[in-house]
Amino acid sequence: MSAPLLFVGATGNLGAPVARHMVASGIAVRALVRDADKASQDKRLAGVELVQGDVRDVAAVQSALSGCTRVYSSLSSDSFDVDESVEVVGLTNLCHAAARQDVSWIGYLSGAGDLASETHLRPLAIKARCEQILCDSGIPWTVFKPTHFFESLPMFVRDGRIAIPGKQPHTYHYLACDDYAQVVIAVMNDAQLHNQALTLLGPEALTMRQALEIYRDALYPGQKVGQLPLWMMRTLGRMTGNADIRRAAELFSAFRAQGDEGAASQLPATVPPINTTCQQWCQQQAST
Image 1 (cartoon, rainbow, N blue to C red):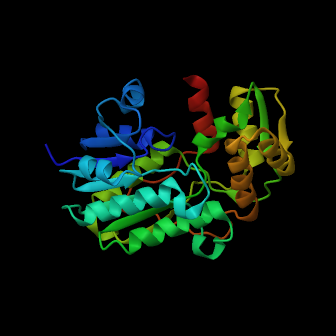
Image 2 (cartoon, helix red, strand yellow; image 1 turned 30 degrees about the vertical axis):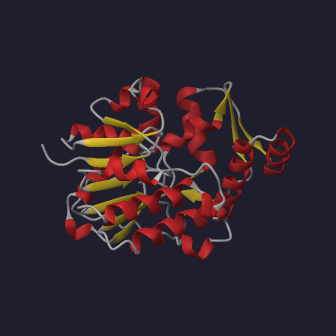
């Protein structure tokens, strides 16, 4: 069997489907997870070797990386303090450890757009910093820059109610994680596609409201798609001390400032297409 790939962020909504497709394609996947017992109950990670540890712990990263020749990071930040965010600290640790071992490629899930020009928005500044860390690592890399995923749509539903945080006027070329996973696998196996930042767009441009209305019609017919003002979220987060609400308000403030209008897909012709539509994805969810 070939040397394993170290996967960081495999338990997340955007990580688990990619790990599952990697395993199905014959890639040996080792995942660094904070709670191995909990992760072992996740059916999406069947066939994944689980190693317990924290990506912010240098020794844990070095140990997990031992024997691996490739790395894929699907980390998401638990803080928007750029210097202390788990993405920045974790990717720094991964790159430093990889430089000391026989690692031939590191892939990183970032976001669409020129993030370096939007560093006044902390969620985007974190992604921009990570892209720079990877580029400076000296290790062959690929930065994947998709727009929004269909897999984010269920997060807008709470107790059967659907609400969009703030006014979100921009359009996004949503894509399905299953399509994205096939792109990652193809790119990691093609050295000619390394050392590139690839903007990845789905087949149709939709506002958040349009995407959620399609999702609503398929899974919650008759429900209204409402809107939750960002000022209300910020106030609620401050009054309750709920850091998750405060982070969500800041994240959707960043989304409000930037869409993917004008972005061009950089999907190489040699990799599988990204062609699942919102309607198709929602129908798949409704049938499962």
